[in-house]
Length: 167
Figure 1 (cartoon, rainbow, N blue to C red):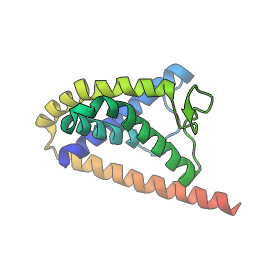
Figure 2 (figure 1 turned 90 degrees about the vertical axis):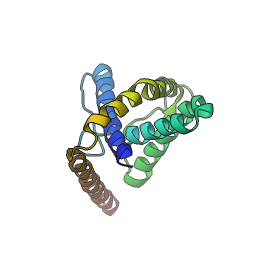
Figure 3 (figure 1 turned 120 degrees about the vertical axis):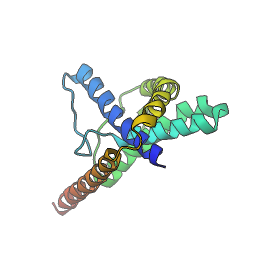
Figure 4 (figure 1 turned 60 degrees about the horizontal axis):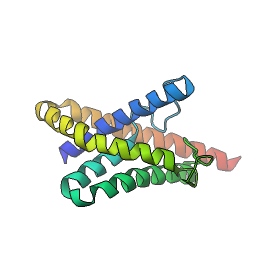
């Protein structure tokens, strides 16, 4: 369980970097609005853990999972943000073969390639590296900071939603 939490935090941070770099090339700015205060994107952490587990326990269906799991995480994340907090951080409604503006064909292809990279190169490197630094006490601190960030961010968003409904 501890290794899973560590990988989750690392994938969440790597996702923040990935989105930042994409935004830098697409819009000229590294950072775009984020649900959390900290430099993490939990949807990448969730997708990374699901993909690594899928590869480890079910290689027979892994190619299909590379297509389905990232899209499912992206769709559910976008739907949750939109319906729970009235937030839209991405909109694919003008893209080819899109669903609800939350997922689209172009990025589905990107997620498939990224999923292959995750399980073939990134996950083995993480497992190797975590053997050496996996027991450091700093991981507990990082995870607690992440949880506090989640609490503070959801509280802030909930208050914003309440104020919006009062208006």
